[in-house]
Structure formats: structure tokens, C-alpha cells
Length: 127
Image (cartoon, rainbow, N blue to C red; front, side, top):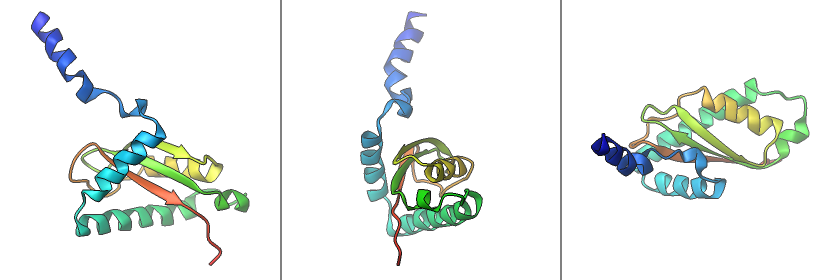
């Protein structure tokens, strides 16, 4: 039994929840993970995020157009299959919340390692 407890205590940091991290910590992890991608992997990630953004534009409420002009950053933790495990948002709004929910139900690109962190930064532009 003591050996089992020792193994659990030694492995606990590896299983510590990423949810305990704050937005600044996960943004740094996302930058590091994204920088580790090859050009081809980065292109796949960007294409995947663009496709999700296209879907979100159709799925999320458009009742408050001003809400869609608010900037936000969404950071996601992906598992080995590309499923979103956790999200963090700065600049919360109805639109960013809808985006987060839509992404949580979607598969993004399959990362080269898990967990993998990536971020989606949104700013509104008139042209």
C-alpha cells in the first residue's frame, strides 16, 4: 500500500488539472506549443480554427452586433484526438461564450502531443 501511495504522489504533478492554471499561464503554454509546430502542422491548426470560426458565425446569436465587436482571447487545451478539454476566456461576452461552447463540442486539429494548448484571438475589423 505504501508503494502505491508513493507512486500516486510522484505522479500527481503529471495529472494536476490544467484548469488550476490562470489565463496568462495557459496563454504562455499555447504560445510555446504553437511555436513547436512545423509549418504544415501550423497551417492545419489555422485552417481548423478558421473552419470552427465559420461554423460559429452561423451558430452563435447575432442579436447583439455590438457584442461581436468586443475583442477576446480563447485558450484551449486539446487532448491527443484534438478534442477540447478545457477553455479559458478573456473578454467574456455572449459571442465569446458561444464560441467556447461550440469549440468544446468540436474536434480541432490532431496535435503532435497531449495536452496541447492553443489560442484563438479575436478582434473586430471594419475592413
